Length: 95
Image (tube, rainbow, N blue to C red; front, side, top):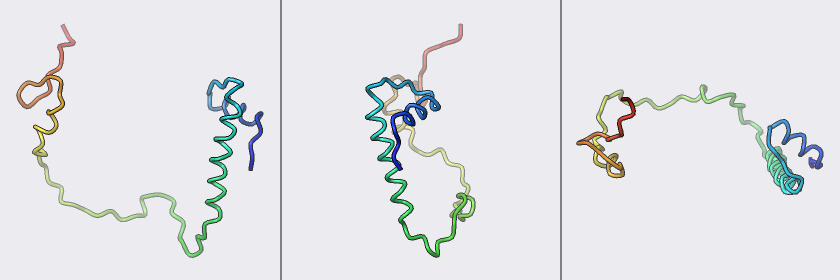
């Protein structure tokens, strides 16, 4: 499938993207490239692969639900612009 300039302008208008006339050709090439990748996906052999409608069908590994402090206060605060002990220091915003 190949998009013509009129379709590119319509897509841009529907997406509320301001498109200058000189950008139509560039965007047309990019969109046609994306559609080319999608067409390649249709060539993939999916015989015997069950459709997946969402991540809810996958069983997740469970871990212990343990509360920890993380033990990384120094690493987290290493790049802080200002700190007060083990806390971030921020300017007062309420008077």
